[in-house]
Length: 435
View (tube, rainbow, N blue to C red):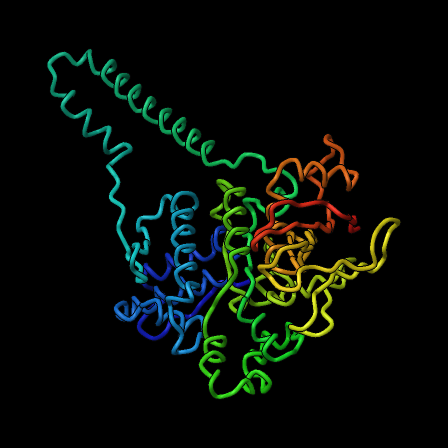
């Protein structure tokens, strides 16, 4: 994919600062994130045009991310999240590919306008050696000159060796340790991993409208403009407006995101959290992805449904309990598994954990789907536990000595017992290998 971007009049292509930006977005660190490349291009272009004072969080959200002009940054943090990721990527570029750049590009914390800072390096090379040797030539005892030059070269070599050792030590410290399976398939240094949380407002809109919804409707925002949603009455118009314009997710999603960041460790810089409304189909190409939530709250998981054995079903939206339908029951399995009637109640809920290749078959997609929030949270808890992961591997027929460098695709159904809206135990119910 080309990363070229033509600047507006005033941001000249011959400007060294603009050329620096082109080198940055062409680097390996930026190849997996179209949104970060667009964000960097935009803020630099506006700065070079003299509009740095206009680069506010709301301005970027409205003009670059195409959010409604009246959206509130208190409820939608996507701009802050992307700028934070951009700062990390810039730091990575200047630490690696761009370490010899004469100018450094930074976005100071608390600001959205980039700053260009010249790098002042100490003089080195033959000129420096000559300046050190000149006083020596004035010495009366010129026979000392070879010894002094040897001393200088020894010091220079010692400095270079120390620099190499320090660099290798720092690199070793940054190198991520081996991650446990299946996280080794979803977190790696070559791919960005996009974590897509659930859209709680989408779930509420479906219940108000009594409609199942679809990814196509979601992407075209039809579920927000639904006539059925509008029929809730004038008294609830403000609620409808709030659902349409705010961005909310569940506690279960927050808990799972925190757990994933902890597991990723040093690779957390490769993680990017996205709200499903901000995701685009092309974002899933050539990236790893974690989808949190069921089709009723995160419609992106519907892309996986035709590949899975356990599929969520709901007879009447908002009026019946959701179930996982077992397409091909094995001996001892049930044809369907019914979860909680409502989130926050006591009882049993179910969830699936699925690991599949992405659409371009160069990355992985992990899906954590609970019938209710408790099930979704339980799915994350299950995977975070080492003993549960060993049980999963054993049930899938994966030995402890298996070659885990080869991708293994699967789906698992788990049951959680919940108390006061939180899972307190999980049980592996069934698994399937996906070939």
